Amino acid sequence: MAPRLLYWGANNDTLEIAVHRRALRAGFTIIELLMVMAIIAIISAVALPKLDFRTFKVDAAARGLASQLAAAQRQAVTNQSNVNVLFDTVTNAIKVHEDVNNDNIQDPTERVRRYPLGDGVVFGVGSTPTRVYTGGSITFTRKQGTVPELIFRRDGSASESGAAYLTSLNSATNGRTKDGRSIEVILATGRVAWYKYVGTTWVRKF
Figure 1 (tube, one colour):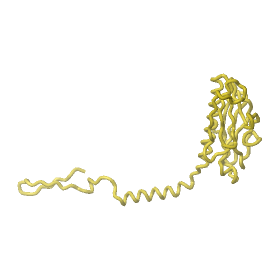
Figure 2: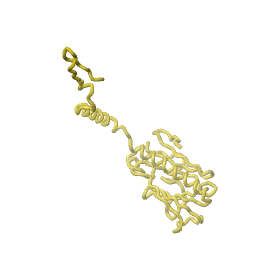
Figure 3: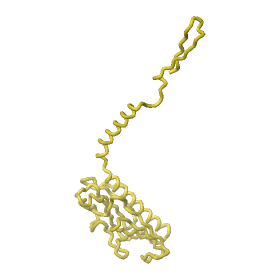
Figure 4: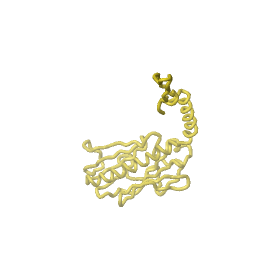
């Protein structure tokens, strides 16, 4: 709002500008800021307990594992040599071994990369029913040493069909089923997909 001009004197030779303080005031008062903070606190207290961070974490881990497997398959085709994926159920991580000479041994000159599942996520089935593949949290039967292994070959195929099951750390022991995830690989094509258990059935997500 523009300042209001007030004139005094018979000849209008005295000019005073009266500024409306309320109209020109900038920012917020302390009371207004406190009110906003109180509203935010109330909304947070109501909404945060309903957020299920375990589900977010296990979804992210399933997407990440599926992406890493798909990348390993592409790398095998690009390099024209085997890429071995090892499922370390002790540390809840995978290792990707670029097996240049296809001897299934980790030679000093061959690159091995490690990818953890993420905080609070483990290999496991828990109380979730298995989808197609059975035989534990990792159904791939081939091993490198004592660790379950899946091999992607230079034509893009996989060493076998199977699945890796994931769940949240708490769900593995408390009977919660909806954190179950299944990351599956098809032998002939090496195609990777992951599924989410929604309480009554498995739903494909990728």
